Length: 220
Image (cartoon, rainbow, N blue to C red; front, top):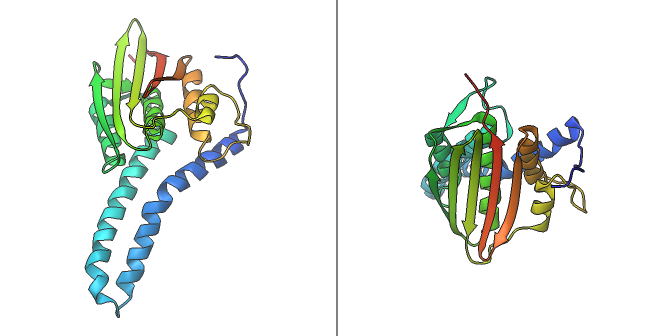
């Protein structure tokens, strides 16, 4: 990875991440608004059952995304510590329930340091994006020799590694400037660099691999 890394002001980073969060939440929140409008229409009672079903589904989706994004982009609580793998599995499963990708795990650890867990969630977002037509995503997390390694393999038809994802993950600015979409891989790379680790992305046939090596902190 080149030593030259793009720098963003805190306000620019905050604005771009906020745009990304709003983008991810707009669909279920918008659906909730539509359903409530139907429920408020007393002349359209035959649609009320469908509207209530949409309320339940959209509120579930919005809650799942908020919980996921709270850790992926936020502090997830102020204290340092370990996030249990079971909790991460639940966050990811709820976030992508009903999606096109099947997500499996191959881990040898019970928990991951909070900031590394944040990186894992961000890499999961990139892995899902890499298989737009669906496929298999395997998440592996191991710890050895003072290093935590996170590896995600996304395999599927028409799998792809967007050039801007590869560039921004490495700390470079996209040619057309940052937006809510390209800031997310940049943020993932920023997490790895701040943890004195590394993160890479590469294509191997129909598989896109994301790998991070992060020094395991001593939290005792």
